Image 1: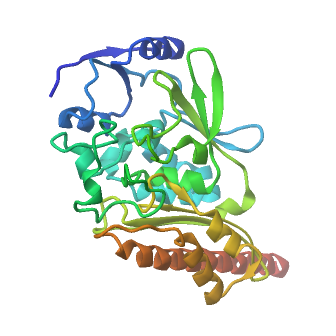
Image 2: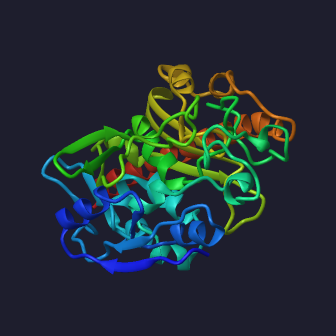
Image 3: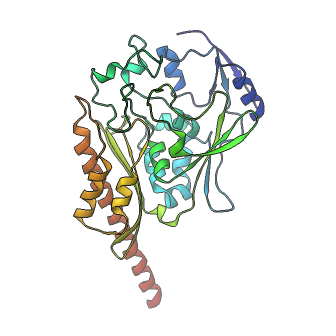
Length: 345
């Protein structure tokens, strides 16, 4: 492991200025991904700048009822926050399906969104990797690619994005709030992540020295009717083979609106507008579910060892749809029973 120094900062502007002026300095918060990357020799900063003292850890509802999550909020705190659990259950469920309790107590929202791929070829400097060193090669193309992407791939990279939380936030149309040295900007999270194309080393739009300060999720009443389904090789502490983040607006057995994103199958958290279109305005039945699942995977390009992900993703979408609709029906029944009980009293 290459030696590095450690420094701590208490002011946001100073933190951004310090990192902006030196490409060899990295922010560190929870460190649950960065320290592993340093140990593996994938990243070699000369200094890590601790930003945990910055006031960016709040979870709150703003004046417009939007949910605002500070970048330094711990994952475990976000998952337990009452508004998240009640109004955005897909976020809470995605977090609770991530990593382990110990890691969730350390990991921050901003760090989770910026974690890097778990592709074994990327994580091992013995191998060439276009994402690690542009212009080398992608050994995963011909290697063991069971965990790799089938959507959004290019000839230069087929690595998946590992974050569960990001998939949920993409489904809900969240916005990433970024602070730079001289300006702020707000980027829709679906645009925040980049497809590999010819530049797989550029994973998102963040420039060096820019800092994620918060994530905002819009106040949409039917986001309470949401769910995160994660399919993996073991029940805990494992990355997704396929995951589905889903929110539905249902009225009289018709799907009025839908938001659907996939994890474990894309080179970035994958929002499927094709599936959303296939669901919108359609009746709740098996044919609708199957059509949406087919639409979501229509552009899939599997590799030698991950062809199974196509069928697994389709079945996962159908299962997630069934789960959300069952919850919706149960909620309606509880509401009706509550009104009936009040009348009797």
